[in-house]
Length: 417
Length: 87
Ligand SMILES: Cc1cc2nc3c(=O)[nH]c(=O)nc-3n(C[C@H](O)[C@H](O)[C@H](O)COP(=O)(O)OP(=O)(O)OC[C@H]3O[C@@H](n4cnc5c(N)ncnc54)[C@H](O)[C@@H]3O)c2cc1C
Ligand SMILES: [Zn+2]
Image (cartoon, rainbow over all chains, first blue to last red; front, top):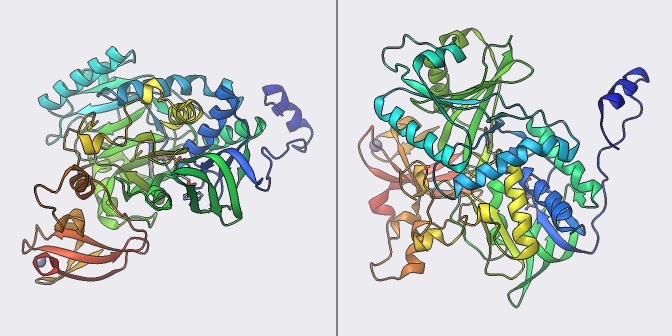
């Protein structure tokens, strides 16, 4: 079933009775060419690109809950390609280009809105760093503009420009960045994969990975054993548990990240804005809610809910940046389980088991990676070779120390990202 | 969340710095080889359930402590001084 403006009008006239379920709900087959473990954004896009780019359609996505119930439906939906280091730079650049063509490609409205991502700086040193980062973005072929305080004021007049403690020295604007509708991204890829013949199997928890003589043979699940020629792990916060089924110990620690949304307001924020003092960022959804968040709670957690100190920190930062926010009521807050890697950058790689692949370590920034990660992972699974934009996301970089991608420059150590 | 410092008693989480899993206490010998050091520095069991992790009571008595805690429920069941935990 294709979507179009005509179809929306027709259904409106005939009582919306013509809409059909968007994907099938099949039982698992005994065997697949590829099993993707995890029905989040990355798992669904991987399955879609396996089918579309490589013609591999005998694929199942196994999801222990429901599609899109993990981090893909919990994030603050920011999409950007404003990284500085080689590795991340080319990867996110490629991913952003896929975002720009996604809606046409999937025939699905993912509400991709390139409203801009503006990062604020509050000191000379920070401004110099932004100039350098902006130059790397431009060198990569992406867009970046260093804004003066007056230009920031023209973009976002509701920010407090009289703050003596954290004066606004300018901003780094990335106009092609923005936001998208997170659920729609999961649904769009799910529908696209299903239409190519991929089986999306929900309520199917993987409980074991079958390996014989160093070669993967399939998986054990809550719905029985399923054989497969290749198995691809992409389970975000649960990566350590699933990798342990294959005898692996990963450089991953799972942490909680919280986010918040206010009641709906009239439009007051033009772009995504991040505050350079303390960790705080904010945007306004199309419904009008202010969507905002801050840093990790900073201790290992699988609770998918956070603690009060980080809530307080986020609220304080919000009030410092734009005191007018104090009038808005917070509707909800929630948390997600982040797969934190030691250098804060991801892993897309083969494993020591033949036919078993690993995709994890997206930390708090894997939503923008959904198309790029799926595209590059599908390439690796199909061809057995690393896809150029993701070729540096190696698992062995921590052991060798070669090719670490530590954007924050704090060191490749677990508690520092 | 409050952590039970063996010296100061129950104290607010904000007084503590989180270092990571208590496996950090099992430092390999200098000549243990790359694989052992890689495992020590980077790889983690990362349990969903009971864990033991290392915290520094930096805004309190300054002790390093090992806290036993559940990562799924956030329940804290006890803490000992790191010097005593290290055996
Ligand atoms: C509060 C918050 C804000 C964020 N904001 C942003 C942002 O603004 N921009 C950005 O780029 N990123 C952001 N992120 C990060 C981003 O959401 C994640 O990095 C990304 O969604 C992770 O990939 P995923 O979608 O595949 O994960 P998930 O949606 O978590 O998918 C993993 C799936 O695997 C399933 N699974 C786990 N174990 C098993 C098993 N044994 N068997 C079968 N299935 C299993 C899970 O049920 C889950 O559905 C944010 C995250 C959070 C929590
Ligand atoms: Zn103390």
